[in-house]
Length: 153
Image (cartoon, rainbow, N blue to C red; front, top):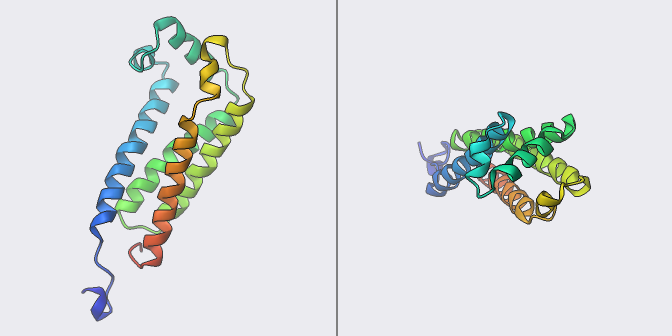
């Protein structure tokens, strides 16, 4: 049935576009998290770091407190779960994206106070976390909007 006859609304085309982009975006974050947790030096050097800097980065990230690592995990996996839940038209996408935002903010708090090694000093001032937070907020806002439109179940 369609929404004019009282049934559930048809899935709008933009949900598929936003959902697919969200999956790819968050899958990159999940891959980065996983490769870093596994200590994959090749992954870090593939992003343009020399081997010595990549080792320093892995050591620095490995020494992060558990709460900072948990925040990073929540941000990454919450975002990926939210993307898949959005594609499944589940209202739980909202909660997953909200959890992701909490994780991103936790990561930002850690990064703001972290004592970076000199060769990684630019990581502390990177605008990338603001981009990540902005995208997470936009995905949450989009999910709320489509929920209010009756698209998410």
